[in-house]
Image (cartoon, one colour):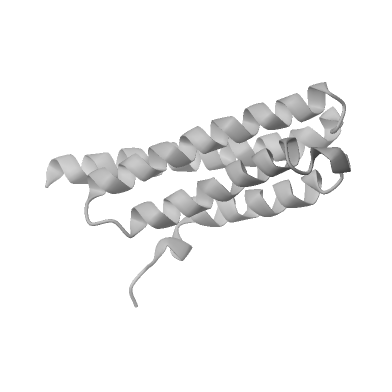
Length: 123
């Protein structure tokens, strides 16, 4: 049985994060639908999407590049959720579990990128 991107823990956790972001952003003000709500959802979707796209590329270098993009999207999402908290769309208690998820995904992306770079440089 061959493994796919769906078997990667980083992708699985990023999917969980995207789900959580969709749920939490559904309570943002309706006038934010085309601004902050749209931005946080795009950033959240970008994380597992780039993991999946990178895993389908022909080389480890390309995969590492897409993992780097996923990490950038994660940092963008983190910033947007901090903004949402600062402007009162989220309570700090709502942000805390989301922050834990973002931290976990960040660690997994870093570990996966390092493993791919090591494997690529060894070959």
